[in-house]
Length: 371
Image 1 (cartoon, rainbow, N blue to C red):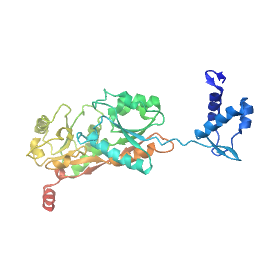
Image 2: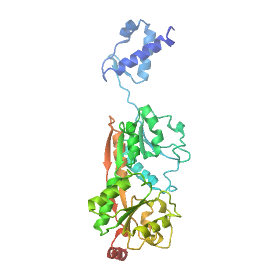
Image 3: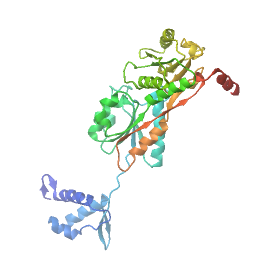
Image 4: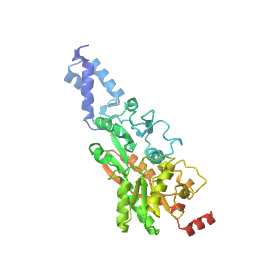
């Protein structure tokens, strides 16, 4: 058979007719074999093979005695890709907030995927849970049809790949300075912002309404001036008209040293309430109350700045700021599954889960009595 530019005549005709069919409306009558033979100057047997191939590909529907009609191929639904830092990230091995929040986001996204009859796959991207150690082979499948759901700037090393391949991305972020750095990527995605700044301000107000006048902050990385916890803390104090302010950076603390850091912080500042980053006390096991372990009077009210599975296990159980991560997962999946992907941004506010650590003494006694 003759060839043109390395392709057979049959392959050339197939390529031309595929493009033509893609531009025609569904159900429209298509040219006959006789008409196409005259157009391309080929034998009837060649054109018959071409038409059979187009029918096999689902681009044509042939009706005996009536002719051939345009048929659109429905692309198989592309599953939502939910990224994970490593293979066992969803197991109980990981008790930190990112893992627990990821499980909740996945739960919401899975519900929507089920409702839409769409698949959802989890894809671990690192063998070591290190964003510097990405197994890029795991992402070879990513293309312009992909629907990616990612939580946190842990994945920032993948942003360039997503941008280059033009995939649809729903990205859950927590108001860090990275937002400014990656604006060029984020503008093309749907960004779901966890409003930690607003939630921290609300926590300060909550404590002020509880009668606290010297509210302090103990948090990691607050040496960054635009850290959401620090900004929210300052904004909350201003709204309450409080001049007292004291903050300590706990980034260098560990499970073993956090107690001494907080105790020294209290000795120098004598606060009556504390906004606490709980990441260093996840696995704390002590016979003493949490206040006593941290070198604080029992009267000091404590509120954690995010919810973890451990918060209710302490004595007193920790009040906390929390976010509707299941709803965030649902909204992210719905946006990814829309017929036409629309970039944008949606902000999700927090709520206070009150437990014993911020209750008045009479409320604690009532709680203990009723339980």
